[in-house]
Length: 252
Image 1 (spheres, one colour):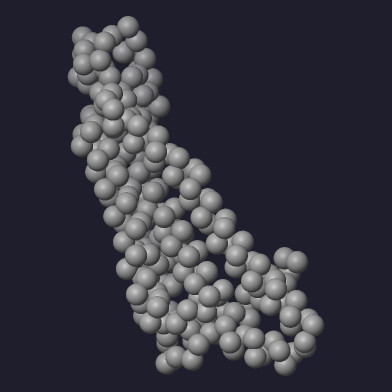
Image 2 (cartoon, one colour):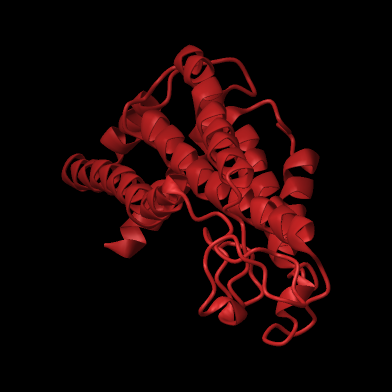
């Protein structure tokens, strides 16, 4: 929460501000991380009081539990998807040397995919009652089955409790498994491939520089970015590329 807030402040105070797509993507990722942080900073007080015998500080109800789970899930999914957008943006600028006009065309998708996917998926989970507490204080279980529901059928409410056992147990519970698969496998795959392509391109450029000398270095770095007006995406990367080359040089 603190790191993302500081980064938002730094973007706002920077010379280019929000005039570059790179800063706007970072802003979206920071906002998503702030949402996730709010969803996890609950000290269990949003957990249903039905589970206070196993969860410390459980003082909420099913509504507070659903709200906490929704915020946490939206923030987590949109953050990792924005990370994908950031990597794809860097890949387009560094390796494929795309123009500012092309960046402006794809930027709506770089924002739209994280926002729309996270909202559509999690609203569906919310409507289908898939934000529940199993007894751990975190409301992210697709089905409500805490210890006191052992031996009870779905829909039954044990005496002295309020939430029915088996809440959320339907065919759409599979959506939670799909979401888990996307976050654990698909997102790291996309990020890893894009970073690998960037690294390979920079490494090849470094080898060319070593072979042909400083004259090639100047011309090659100039070819990576297209000419644009001051404050554009390409001119922004002109300042970053020398440091990027130095960074990868230290890695190798």
